[in-house]
Length: 458
Image (cartoon, rainbow, N blue to C red; front, side, top):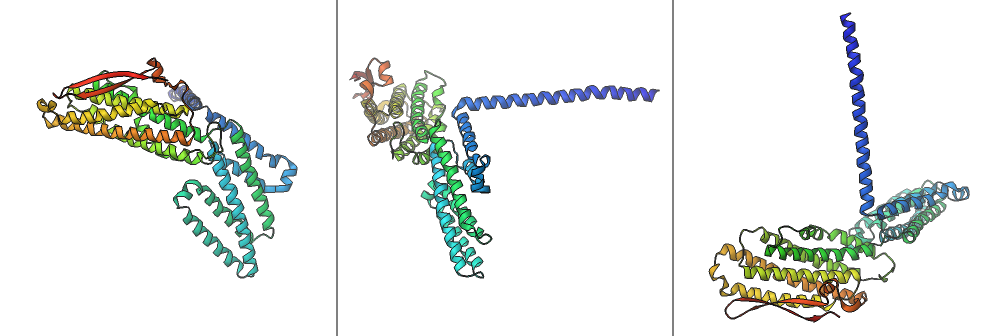
């Protein structure tokens, strides 16, 4: 009886524990599903174009699937219809430029490699049955070696790498298939046609259904990076004066420094795109890369200024004021240039005014560092960090000047329009008056700062 009661207790304890295990498993599963739903919502909210792109891929695949659903089409192409589906899967990309690049690469490579493969097959047939496999193997070897080596060329790697891969694949398939099939021309014809249909479907859907232009993304990215760098410099100036402890303006500088790869990819895709909107055919995309490169160079110098903020040594207030003014003026100039790029308008005179003011301030700062103002602050632990900051700011001023010249060149090459009313966002907030900071050192080594507001907008 005691044994039976123990068995009953074990059974009674087993069922509740089993239910608790199942309940916990269900709760974990529901929590995982909620997490996945949040991730889906966040991904779609961050960039709604991702959801649209997914729908476009579904539409394209449905269209090429008609080769299987429609009996007359299937009779004409047979199992070669699968090449159309495969083409859509591998060619359809997020942007129009990427899709056009892959589509044209695949189409041209298929045509050229198919023709050469058929030619290689017939040359091998002329040599006789004994030499045919040897010649086919030799042709495959030679083209694989040559094509693979050509892929290492920088320009080919950047724009035609996918096409070279398809060329190698198609040539091998066509040339080798001829050894076991007498209908090599018919096989090649079906494959080429289905691949071209798949590529054309991708291009049409990508261009005409909510297109995503890589050129526009590059355009906005360059403008945003200029704006981020301008925000950083303005925040640096405020922190030098101690008016703020931390600022969101200092966040995002690493994004600018790490943007080279993305900018080059977008520029490569943009070159494939036709003229659209304000972006004409053969738009000067290389100039955007030049501006981006100069922006990264400026950002690398600005990044070094962080060490000054964390330094325990501080300069006299007069020098701190000059450094803060130079930093703020640099930030304002970059934000003016960012606005000009974003709105595709010619840069206003104000960035150049900022640059001129920066040059004068830089000379005054260098003079001040050599003046008697440091008599009471001769400690090298104070002098060296400030001198380093002065040197970095001097390089920053040079970088800002180069960026201004590059943006002006872009406005000429891309035929930017004139700003409406000749005013910028910052000018409007000042009621049409631009204030420039002038820094002057008198004979006694004292620093005087004055403001002039004689430049009227418009």
